[in-house]
Length: 253
Image (cartoon, rainbow, N blue to C red):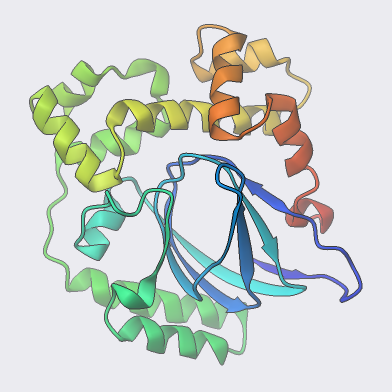
């Protein structure tokens, strides 16, 4: 994604509510400063960041000329890619150069000198393909279960998840925490909240009760509770903030 604002323009803040999305982000132009409402802290992110699951809201402020490539991973895949449990990555934006081999630095340097967006993507795919080919890992039933949860939160109980993963409940919970950083119950709650948020963003004329029920909530009040925990605001306030995000102002998202 590439944002270019006039140097005299005020750049809008981008709200990021809680999400189970895990990714590797290359910051190619500009920097991003993150404000954490829960703690009041401001953090400048590393130029290559590994993003774990997010359990509370962050607000991003970017430079006038800002270019990134974000590589999103399926649930459980980032842990395999890093060869690390994700328990220390929750709510963190970790410097990738500190945990991956020097090839990640060389990849970023090549991106800085790339001649097109297509070239940037090609460079990323070369790096990712090479690392993936060197990984020795299996695709297990738990990986399939974790991949299904985000779009099927209303159908899954912990017992059903464990059964589908061919594990006992305690084994499933322990393995799931290693692979995602959070418990399966908490993971499912965040997915349900995020689904409701995206549904309302996609269908703004739908009332909140209909959105809540469609996303798998028992009632509107349960949805409001999750919004306050995972977005730090009431439901309508998050959508209002999102409407002022950089990609919305520029008409590209």
